[in-house]
Length: 221
Image 1: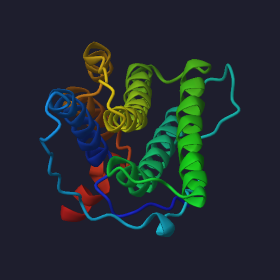
Image 2: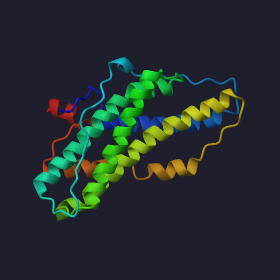
Image 3: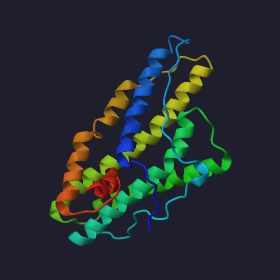
Image 4: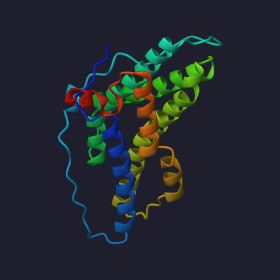
């Protein structure tokens, strides 16, 4: 069974991505004025010591097979639920990095394992939908889901690394450079419109998942 935490899920992931972009823009402007400070309010998160690495990711050895609709529904659910659990598990570590802290060796090993599993989950699902024949009504949306989640993860981890490098350069008295164009290009495919298309598809096909904060939404209904 998946182990996941009571966090806001994919919506929080999107907020983190947008927050990271905002911070990069803000730091770029403030690098001209060393005396300016930025006050941020951190959300309360669990300790890195309390994080348990999720035990399930999407995996399939199937190649050149015809995938039935029920199997496809389960595959999408497993992929999205696994991503949600991994994303939630990464938040305490990312918050330490965002706050300018350093991860201890055991924390770094745990965080690296979460990142590795996230990448493997993305690659496995992408390979699955590319190398098999999916139900016609699932082909376009499965690709949309794969691209959306994969890019979201790349942005989440990549922007945290960019911020860390940016602030390191500032502390060393170097003038950091931010490639605004590449950041904008990366975010074009990850937005509210794309997420709504995915959620509409999940509702239409009756795919029950904890992704996009849907577990919390279900409790409120």
